[in-house]
Image (cartoon, rainbow, N blue to C red; front, side, top):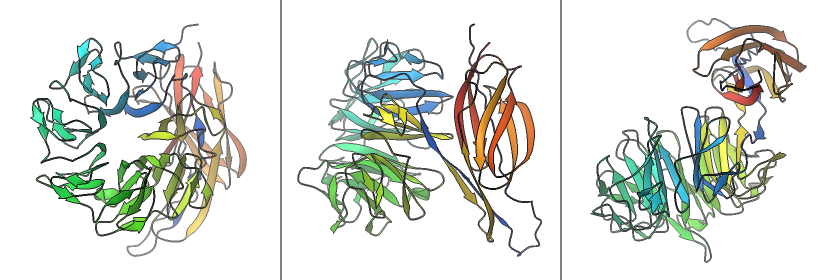
Length: 470
């Protein structure tokens, strides 16, 4: 039978103890909740490496070196609508290396291409949902990085020396009408850009000069001029420069990844942290080049690249750093990771790999992220760790069963939403004992289509997918 798309979100709140009132100044009880995480890959295979991802309104956009997605010709850029890959017009004539989405859903693509759809678009283009357009005649060479600031200003970095009509050395900004230079720019490629709020912009790459000042591989723009971050980074003899950036809360610290050998004159290879005054290592670091960084809302720094160990932990090609510890993402991916992107309760991870953990994956996979929370005050009374198995049956015709395991007793509630985010069903599932459990959802009244389920503590979420068949 024909299926129609919808979204189902199961919200499971784990309350590990009773609520308490407290007099002012008295400590509140503390609760802890942890959910195991896992890999999934619902996407039909992309035929080449994935270099960039972006999401908007439930749609996932990817760019890279692929020509086909799930057997459909897409030419380097595609959109996943929750059910299948869709082309964006006729795509681009050469690879897409960077993507950015504004609040209105306009997709910006950068790369080595000269056309997008039937439009001449030199290295940068915009997709408005139905057609491609150029941005001020584009650049005269490759765009490696795109980023939007909080005001909607678009920044582009690359190997170009002109942007539109402007003399713009390797970095420029687009205000919606024209390209403008940022001071005197850089003397070599820019591979990563990270807006930090206000006028502050960080850039990383292969440059040694920024705005006429010595600034090895990383620099900060304050709205008027470029400034170095200490003595910067130095590459290994056969290494690539700095290729990725991530910022902590409020723009600090600044994390930089690449193939450099030293930071601030110290031997700190591949991954380094700038706290505003000095460079330092991130734990024991990683044992190979870094190509992707993401700072998550919970303070976890996700790192991807060509490494196989993080600190003293086996972590093939991807790892997370939090609370002073490295942790693997199961047994990682089978090849290098080039992009890590947060989308609500999951990470989208792209690169050049055929599997992620035990899951087959054609260069793109999802990491369903764990939940770990505790109140800031008072001792932890109890921790309820939870792991969830796959929905059964899948596809579903009437009743969906979701197995899960608790390490301690917990109150479980389920909330069901439709594709518009409207609440359709709220179930108080009651107190569940430690050990194996099954949550049951009556899907008999739901229309057919693809659904998501989400486990939620109120602070973090965890999702999976299943299909209702009619």
